[in-house]
Length: 396
Image (cartoon, rainbow, N blue to C red; front, side, top):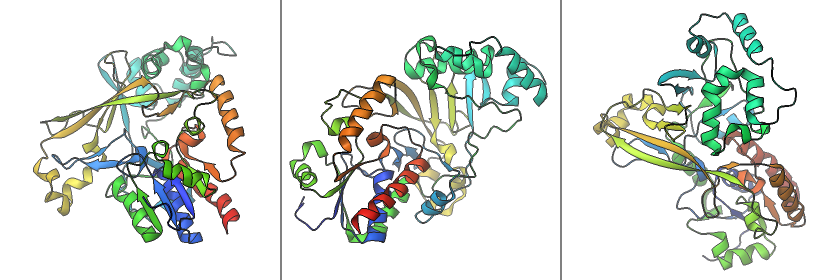
């Protein structure tokens, strides 16, 4: 890599935050940007690729569903991809019976073997959550206070225990701030105005962003900031650096590690046309150990009628499907962090790192790792657009 080239900005991380900042810096400020990423692809955890044996698009790091209430974000992303009319719906298995999620009137009536009206269902939940402490001390008390004990025990308690590998009684009540219950039969998972999946896949969307930047964006993959002295020296030279990796790692963990949850994925190609009949099936009980199964074929049902896909491996292998079992696990250094644990101790450490970062005038931290925050895709883009406005005022 020739870091002696005339770069104005260094971006560490080719995920959504980094790509959005790069695109804006190039098109609005005419800057030359060097971007690096330790992986062999762009797009971060949102990346997807087409399986070469079946032609099915697989989300490499778990299901990513684009949805947003933010008009400016929706308009921005539509510059780089069109979206399908996909509406996300999730189901869960409890005691070998399938129920719709989020909990709605259909879930309630099926679970209780009843035909409650909306008002009757509200009264039932109110009654079942009445005898809970005013100040819940753990996740169990918090959950019961929100949806009552029967529904909590069936759909939340054991699922959350698997997610955190800790009994719900020992988890903080802050993990569940709210549990949505719909007193109608609407089982759409999201309520946002805008929703869909990129028509040609996430990989194509991200490549379109890169292509729009032309030769003003130079990307070097399989380049780890912490193992590349040349890039580190460039950062230390005073070049504006957008860093989207873990903030604690940037400062050599001097205040200790911020804790995360991680995931394992188990992929399997099956010789059946349809394994579970839906994109995502949760498993609410302690067994099996996985929390959910993704079946990616169901994310793009429209492709089977597309003439281009009919010529591809997708059509030739239409009698096959791909499933991915998702397991939650404790994060260890060197593994991929997914969900911030965010204890009081973590927040204290984060404040120390943020105070240190405030003294680094040429380094800007962003994204879920840089900010130690769980961001949906739209919030990542919104944060990047907002951060760009701050940067723009400083570099022009």
